[in-house]
Length: 587
Image (cartoon, rainbow, N blue to C red):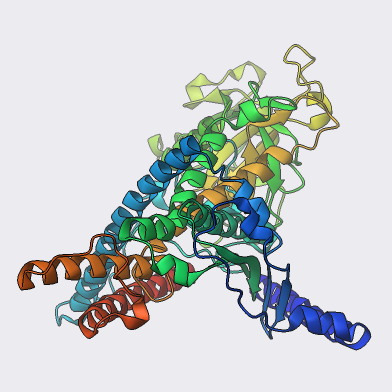
């Protein structure tokens, strides 16, 4: 359903784009023609010496509308970009040093990404070899321990649980997960997804543009594009000017994009770790429980635990933070004490045939028919030769109003014959969990000294249903009129940005076709082969780099080396991407 909704929205959007294009062409033909006609490249000076270069040419804007693509480019922003890089000696030295560090990182990322892809390719070959082996047991299924079954700690989310981003990252193989809208990214998170991609793309291209200005390479134009649902940005540099630069200057420009992504990722990480400080004007960390942000439609707790309510305790133990909440649910999953907790109840032996609620099995742990009653069974019946006594009782009433016991001897017989009985559910992961809830009306002032109006919600089921169905947070508004969702919207957007920007910082330096890594590879091959040629032939090497030519005109040996390495990197990257995409689909 999510995929169908995404496809429908995408088709409608692009249909509207085409209709708008036809309307503009029909009613404003001249302006539309000027806007969509190809723009001939200018011929700016090779080495501009001031920011006036950005306004030296006539301004232009260019719009391109394709069947599934939309792009817009302009040179109107060139002057603003030049103003970001002051042309003074101290600033020039700082920027050279800054982008030199970026070039070092870019080279490390290039070799590191190739090592990662090679290791991934080898591991895939090992898997295929094992499957092809006659002794391989392809029917064997890996069994997961209870704590691994959809119960992974959300370490990337400090202030809320089970964001759509965190759900999509769970279960990734080899540290690489494809985030696909409608598959492992909920459609409701599409806005975060698109905005994060656009921010990362703009920051990446801004790196290339600013580094080019530092190295006095003219900027032709900048722009943004949208391909299907994937946005991005681009910058066009004057290639003839770039080709005259030395290897270190080229690498500073080429690697500046991924270096900006690293800086953006570190800044976002810092903001995430100090988010309460940034939002302290209107929000604070709760010290009296965790706040309910959302309850999924298919959750059994929907309607019983409303959004904005506070959960202060789980089975009588305080849940003050996100980590407390997850730890308590985890402990209840791996420990079956709660389901075997006895309660002193007044009960007599009845005909078992009349106890419909006790007609349970592992396939039907709560009975074959819906009922408000739950089957209870005598706790210490194994000490007698008689069959265990059973009774159909209201679980919430029993757990709230009856004393606990371990055996019948713990019960007070003064008020009549009593039995020590516990919930009977023949299913290994069903637990009895009591949540102490305070609705938002009673927490509006967020004053711990205010009158306690908490209530208890009794849940009988798998704790993973709570963890998956109830999203909670630890940041609460200081005033009732403030929306409770703002900190968590900011958190999820920052998580997407951090993930995408670090991914760009690594995988954009893979020496594959059309990536920054391939351009860096050309420079590296040029330097290495020129050095080898100079030492073997005894000729001097022009270290200025001005004798180096572009990728299209290098000699046959350089072209062949770059081609083979790029093809190998493209194959390895394609295999890794395919493996990750299949993993996103659960294949």
